[in-house]
Length: 380
Ligand code: XYH
Ligand code: MG
Image (cartoon, rainbow, N blue to C red):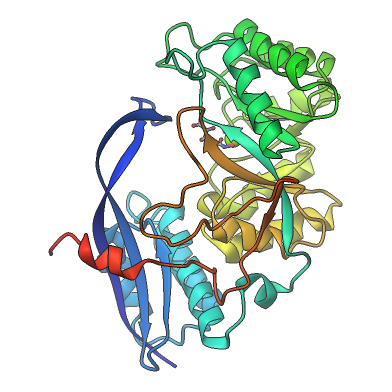
């Protein structure tokens, strides 16, 4: 089997999610948006798909490497793309590698009529989810006050979630960042949901060591399970210092560059108690499994960053598995249970016990509405 084409199709849809000047997502007015479908095409007619890739780097950097290769040589292709990143980091970022790697895993599953997690070596077929909120906002009835977070946590508990992670207020929101307000939101949530719900915090990502320590000590009093990314993750030493001071579990790194090598450094230096990363941070399912096996060798869990089928299939193939699937980002104003128009069903359906079930369909299990993609395709 040989790869004969690599295509990115751009199409339009209506979105109610907007980004603030820092890039954080929030509910907003309905507007036109675009999405992309990456298609890796073979000479045997089998294709692999993923959503979100940028057309430019795929056409100029990825396609010339893939054409003519056997799509089952994922490790070789991933290593070639990783090496090509060194002088093309502005365009060939880890997310691009992730889209390509996921489409290759999808292609293998479709060719062999197996879900990806079984090709990886299945371990389970469902994973407990946590409700992962959007960052705080100033929308009345949204996530604008500690009481609003508490109300939303109760709604998520009623939906079946057994765990809830707050993303609290970040700049450019007025008054952010503020350790005291973060702790007020966490206290309101704990008061509302009771002692049994698992709670985590993902706050402003650039607090000082002292602010992160004050936050961590406050979370210990509230019985929180983990805190992630309270400081700039480029300072490993700061996380070593923080983890030494706290009983609260520190989970990371999430966004620090360097794939599984960075995670190895954090583990050997004691910068975190739980490792972290998702397909977007590491560059695909292939490196995410490398990081999972690295963590396992140290008897540590890796909690996967972000949702989506790539992360879910990896979670279902981990020996020391991440305990949770990050479902979100959620907000009281948005109905997460509705699939996007380009899919006929949610890729991460959750039962009323709080478990997300991995698809048994071949590949990543995406039930793609190709007719929608065709009908809304952007010419060119
Ligand atoms: O928007 O700052 C943010 C969130 O932290 C986002 O980057 C991401 O979804 C995350 O951190 N999830 O845990
Ligand atoms: Mg995070």
